[in-house]
Image 1 (cartoon, rainbow, N blue to C red):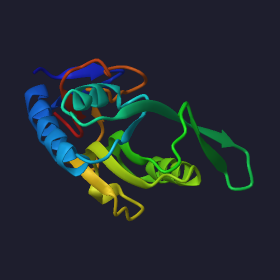
Image 2 (cartoon, rainbow, N blue to C red):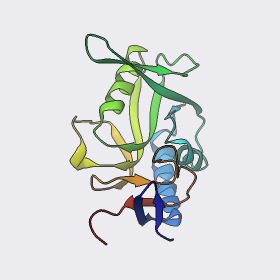
Image 3 (cartoon, rainbow, N blue to C red):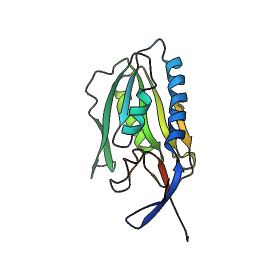
Length: 181
């Protein structure tokens, strides 16, 4: 792995794809055990989750369905913004849901995603995230069940995560190099 530069920001190697694959394999085993007698729906939150979700689903061997959603926000409302899930495309009432996220940072978009799903009267919601930044969380979540890696509040790209639309295609995860050097 080599250092990369995008728009005057420098990034160094952080988590190699082999390490990501090993962690996903373990998460898949856990999901297979937890959902052995259920038929969950995996809801991937775009755009960042696409690589993680693709690799994760290769490790999930229980009967399941999947869909992808986008969170849309509308500025200029009384509350500042309204968030809505776009793209569910199926009836989720009474279903066990696993939200698949690339990264949980402040938790703001996860909170809105969960609220939008709860309105649909789902049976349960579990969260599976590749990365979580515990020091950045602004909410308490008791249903983040599957975590790939806990990281510090730093800027990361690669493996679905982007900077200005770039670097999503990189197999490894890189973190921004800060300070002199």
